[in-house]
Length: 345
Image (tube, rainbow, N blue to C red; front, top):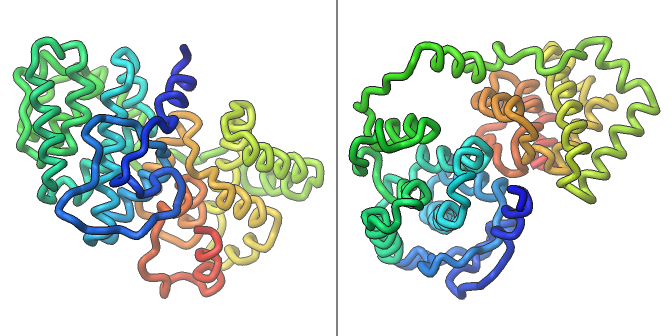
């Protein structure tokens, strides 16, 4: 069974708990009650959810921590924990290197891990801890560790001899979260390869596309090319798993983003009123920002952590799910962009 099919089957709805009424699949959130229970289902039953929705929930809790946003984040945390328990153990490295692994790291960096656990969360943590210590569960130890870590506070969880027992793909994040003093000794060649494959800044990643400037603008003056772009976006709306469409739109997104990064601030509104702006709006409102088609897309998203201009903000929106980017103070933005943000997000 392929990984994609397995994911689809695993994330399909199976059971519904009356306490699990929050929608973790779409952007619609129901009324949030704040009992002293988090409302999680300790049976491990799977609920429908999406990476984009959980990412938006964790980011909202980080930017606007409140009893309401943290309560929703508690249920999102539980969904991800259940996912790790049901994931194939021989696919964990692949999954952890994907957007799902980025989601795990996002919650470990957020405010929820510093909150006191609700009573049902404490029971869930103890249940996972007991299984992790059970020798018969050793084949699932990494599944259990991933499921358990977000229910522990930073620096409070330890694994015996982690440098010998943990895989290379998990050890750095374990050390960062659980044991910051752990000396990580890796061959220099491996460290150099990591730095080359994951540039730290947007400047190091540019150009995002080989076509830029006048060459790129020529595409948006070509009626046939524009028709093709529109057709691809429409096809994505009908079938978001078409790999050919995903790859073509990923390339188009990089071209559009580079155009925004290349212009002067005085040119932004003018560009937004051209077909470039139309395609930009179409990609954002189609929620293509939730898609990370390859490792390059992942690196670009991570590099957009703090846009330093309105043009960079527009480019950033192309790489994030709808609702994931929140601008607290729009007073520094041009009026036209501040108004457009309401329709784009």
